[in-house]
Length: 66
Length: 141
Image 1 (cartoon, rainbow over the protein chains, first blue to last red):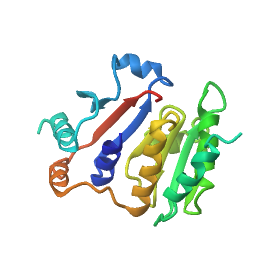
Image 2 (cartoon, each protein chain N blue to C red):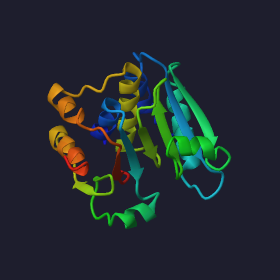
Image 3 (cartoon, chains in turn red, cyan):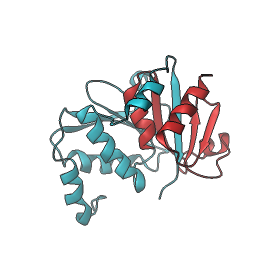
């Protein structure tokens, strides 16, 4: 979670939400959450589990087709 | 009864002891159909009481719909963490358990205007030139 918020601080185009899914079951359903943390980037790229910062950054770029 | 345990209060206060710029916590709630709105308000109120650099402002999602839209807030409880700048840091749902540490560490980062990311990571992120919305879905720990 911290990495996503740090990324938001580092780049003005990035917004990062923590979403506590037990309070928002419709979101858990929408993304078919079976494990956490599940990171959803621009609705297109999903990352399950905690990953190192460099891998996370690559996933962010992947979501932009870069 | 306070939400932050007495045994934890000192540690949190110490963690928040050397903040730099003021930090605003902007909380959106709703009077009804929001089980965690009041506990979240209480928890954040207790955090704000631990440092003169932290302020808490509470808004109603329906009455302040315009402001909520500005922040991209569409569900409650929602917390925007910012200083004079909005970095895009949001919490939907109560930041308790493991995410309480996230909140405290985020407050420190925002106040110091430091994220601590390494140069290679920043080089990668510099390529981001279009909006990116990251949602990290978590459960209470």
